[in-house]
Length: 220
Image (cartoon, rainbow, N blue to C red; front, top):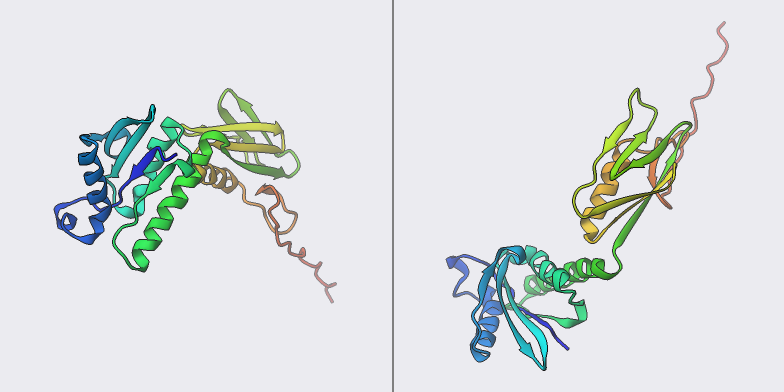
């Protein structure tokens, strides 16, 4: 059963009467038929209406972001109310390749972010190097990476870090993009070097190794 109907469009008067806002027109028509009023909801970055259908909640949404960012608006509402991707219907806007691409991008962002509600996303990092290690104190991650001082990292909201062993840690969260960015930031504290492989790498990451410098010949 569809629980969330989404109409795509672009905000602003310059788009109001163009085919870019066909998705908005569709949601407006649904709202009129259902005698609903769309109201701005800052938490979902859009205009929202809610009703009941067959005893179950039903939402209408017009994201007030540009179409290439509308997936975040949809995912915010879907994530909060635990609506699965298969329960979301996104209207296709206008026509042509660009419209189809935007429609597909929105569906992909929705699927990724809503998946985080139930399963979550994880990135695993591995640490290599003598004396290199990670430890957790509360939420704060402390890394010893061969520098003269430890590195301390406070994860942003929505991210949890788990230290499985001193040389293996996991970055977990609901937002796939944020999980990837945090993992990249941590890896960036000591990227793996190509000679001995010391540093932080993603689990399963292949590091192309380089041979060490050959010893110099004997002087005459």
